[in-house]
Image (cartoon, rainbow, N blue to C red):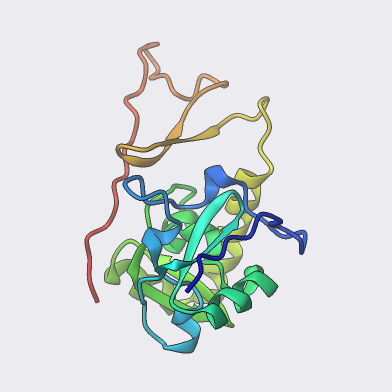
Length: 190
């Protein structure tokens, strides 16, 4: 088998800026090296193989086989997890939490990852409302500029966090700096 890598990424015009894709800090792989297409085909998470890697949105994605890799390459907007693999329920609250690849749901042919089964259950009670609210928050994060009130940063050691840079939101009323919220990766299995 040969290792397949795609240097000409984002040919379809759809991509997520790298800083918004959930990447395993130890391996550098998107969604912990799990195959995003396997959720649709096999109806379960499966770890991808090093032989089948694809570069998309400046991030390495792994797949179980060549067919899954080809399907993702053709339509990444279908198979890539929504919100870059972050917890779909947390996005409703305008916060970032790492989505656990073993806690997932497919709704209207889109993949959503969650921090825990409890958060997935709560989200599935009213998914349409949660999707609408989360997309509004996600779009604001994707379209931020340096002049925006809040910028997103990622810390490889602790996962993603929000920083209050640029607007004074990172300070307490008495002028002291607000401690950063650190959101680690989930360890929940379904």
